Image (tube, rainbow, N blue to C red):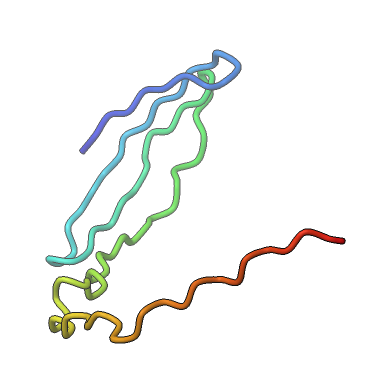
Length: 85
């Protein structure tokens, strides 16, 4: 349970009670209760289900790539620019 207080852009005040409830090892439910904006009670927020997503495979988890082999032919130099006649 979290008691939150804040200030709006126009200087007004806000407060609410945030309830975070574990569902399983990868998800939680979040509810916002007792909400007050500028001294007026507003409806409770809806319930939000937050679910952890597995990390994407990283390059470090991928098999090592074969080392790059150096080029076997020398680079060809670019032709010299010629001045207009």
